[in-house]
Image (cartoon, rainbow, N blue to C red; front, side):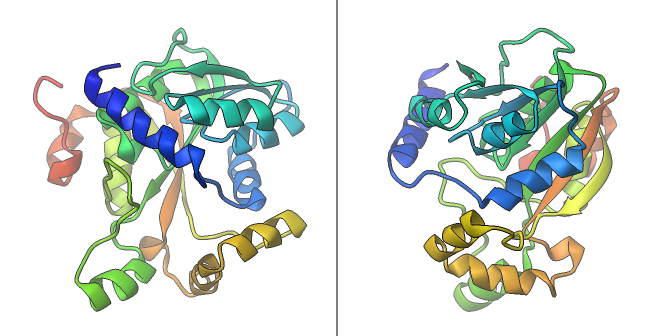
Length: 254
């Protein structure tokens, strides 16, 4: 990693030493359901964080792999999913051969990469022909953000991370297809309704999310909090670069 990316990794180490990033259990189950992930298949979770998705995938009988460039995150992931094959690595340079995995997941991470273009291309590279990826990306026009941030404060969305990008639903789809991923389905990524005691405990620890949960029922798809893109590998479409907002356009020679 370069010195700059090492500094970014250090910021995530500090975050995972504290509360870290985690969603309720039903959110991870929902992702695996959307992938229709089958037992015995291989799954790579890019930027696996604390290993919650890996734990759910292991229970479903998948052979799971995870990478993160935050050492503290991997320590937590080993505790959450001891059967997972974990590696300290940068998502922009995945340490796997071409066509290695049946499934790849990347949840709320590509938008924080130094080089998100290479990150998307790497996901496409390691997918087997006919494999599927589930990629979660944030909306620049989330209805709750428009009300609580833009209307009240005059500021846009903020996930309080070192690097962050936001875009609209079709803009993210164009970005993924530019880098070699065909979007075959797009799902709204609003908070999931609690389905078990673990979910309710999570919501008690994150009470503000209950407001977003209620708002999600009334939120139109294009104004959802985020979007889950189900993708298959395809030929890159570089001509889409000119259609993207500036912060998503791939730099010349990049």
